[in-house]
Length: 261
Ligand SMILES: C[S@@+](CC[C@H](N)C(=O)[O-])C[C@H]1O[C@@H](n2cnc3c(N)ncnc32)[C@H](O)[C@@H]1O
Image 1 (cartoon, protein in one colour):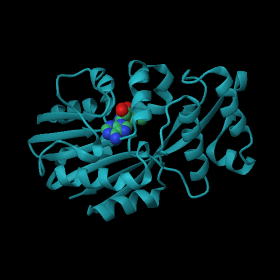
Image 2 (cartoon, protein in one colour):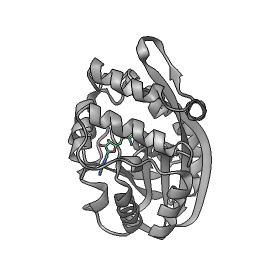
Image 3 (cartoon, protein in one colour):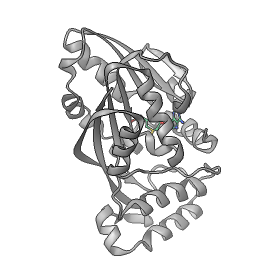
Image 4 (cartoon, helix red, strand yellow):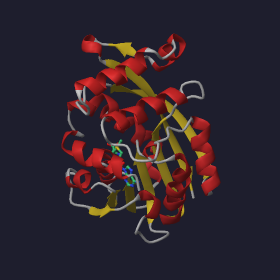
C-alpha cells in the first residue's frame, strides 16, 4: 500500500469536496456518465460498490439515479483513507481497505464504480485491483471505470508532474503512481478477464497546479520550473497554461470504460 499517498488523502479529505478540486472532479459530468452507464437495465434490487470512492460523490449520485428508477440500491463504499470515507455524506456500508485486497465476498455486486482511482496505484499493482473488481462482481455484472487517460505522447509528463508533486509535497514513498493510456486501460480490463469492453471519450478535467496549497512556495517553484521546461508541443497537447503568480493549469482527458463479467 502506498503510505505516502494515504497521508496525502488523509490531509486533503476535508477539502476534496470543495472548490479547490471542483474542476478536477467535474461533478457536472456525473449525470452524463450515469446515462452512458445504462442504469435502466439493472435488476430491481441492485448492489453497488464504489471502489476508491473518496467522498463518494459518484456512488451517491448513482444510488440516487437507480432509486429514481424505482429500484432498490444497496451502496458499499471502499477507500483506504478513513478520513475520505468520513466525508462521504450517506449512510452506507463503509469499508476501509486497499482496493488490491478487498475484504468483500466474491460474486456480490451488480455494479462496481471507480472514478479517478486506478492512476493512484503503481503500474504493476493496477492489474490486482482490476482482478479484485472482477472477483466481487456477480456473473453478468458491470464495471464503470472513469479514468484520466494520457496518450503515449503525453504520458511521461502527466506521470512526472504528479509524482514530482508527491515528492515535493512529502507524500512520496518508493512507489510511483501511473496514469495509464487508453490502450493500457483496455489491456488491464481484458487481461483481468472482463468482456464487452466499451470506451466512451467524454470530457476534460482541469488540474490547477498551485491552487490546492499542497506544498511550500519554494517547492511549488521547483514544480513550476519543471513544468515551464516541458516542450511546447507537449504543453499544447496537455493544454498547459501559465496563470498569475507562476501557477499552472492543465487539462487531463477523461475516458469512461464500461466492461462486463
Ligand atoms: C483522486 S481520489 C478520487 C476520489 C473519488 N473517487 C472521486 O472521484 O471523487 C482517489 C481516491 O482513491 C483512494 N485510494 C488511493 N489508493 C487506494 C488504494 N490502494 N486502495 C483504496 N483506495 C485508494 C484515495 O484515498 C482517494 O480517496
